[in-house]
Image (cartoon, rainbow, N blue to C red; front, top):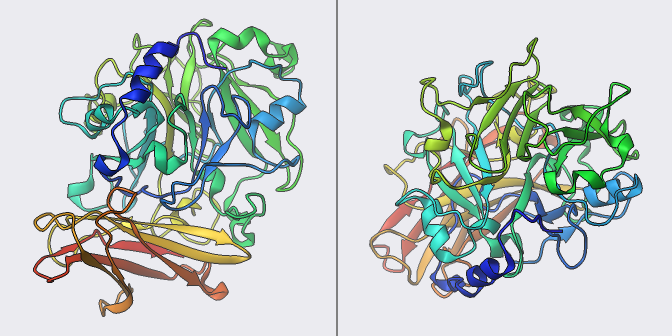
Length: 487
């Protein structure tokens, strides 16, 4: 059920009728392009309610998002909440599995660990305009900015300097498989799918079990407008009743991978977070290992990226999330306009080189995402991405090339994939593909699935995908950012 504070139906209609045709849109890009992601869609889709967890699998196939299975252990919030008495009309805001990597110090200053890199994924409400010249502003012109995901590489990250502090569109509305009439992406979580079989959407990669905390959790908030619909028992905190609030974080737990979810209960009441009862948490990223929280609240009275350290004694209230200099706000650097309202947040850190131990020593995302490295031919001009996939009891690494050589541009050409096995730089050819200048998906993503032998699935072994885009005459060769993969 859409919240009264969301865009009016007439405004949504104007946005939808003004959509730019897919063939004329700019391509997605960046480290999370094509990544698997779970989303909540405000108002729900025809098949389910507001809190239904929709899944986008690896890739750019433009297929509709999938629903999670109907099972007691399924991480579908709509099923979980309905099983515990949620009435129709309850509006859930963002959610988090607690596996976000909130890379800030205790004062809310961005602090990426040495040799690591991080990325902030976020969505905005309809009506966002973006800062002039930003990728968000470009998407606003295309007309579906509220159903789009963006990714910003955190300053201090150990990746090529040209990528640091850069915002890309990681998923368009069509790539997420959402219809033109879809309202807004209201919740984002990438870790929920890591290690999950992407065909069955329930079975877990056995090798990933040591990387996932037990008990498992889903943290979520409900809207201020529908807080009165929440069953009274859900507001219990440490056995004590608390007042209903859209600024309270609720939680469900399960103790085993295939076990049922507990009844919802209050995890962090609004007072613990230093918020007022009538405030409304909209975006939510929680790091249960570090006990750090990055979130947003509805409206722009506060900054759109707020931080609370729940591991410190005597929380004094949220602080604005800051850049490494401790002065600038990160909200001023992601490409959003001051009036843009953040709707959902997810934060990730691959923690390169920390393999084979549970968090925080090891990280499931670090075994699931290719990390950009410096190119061999200078500054790369096209995009590449790589993400792990589990399907049919087999593990794959999917990789894509996205975009066209900058001079010869969109036209007939060739995509070539080479693999180097670290630390050797010998180029091993793996795939040669013809490009399609009339491809339905902007940037004509070229795909190669690499089957990972069982002995290497979580071995610490590393290799690098190296893509190149060429015109047919091979008069221009554009290298993509090499992607180092840790198994």
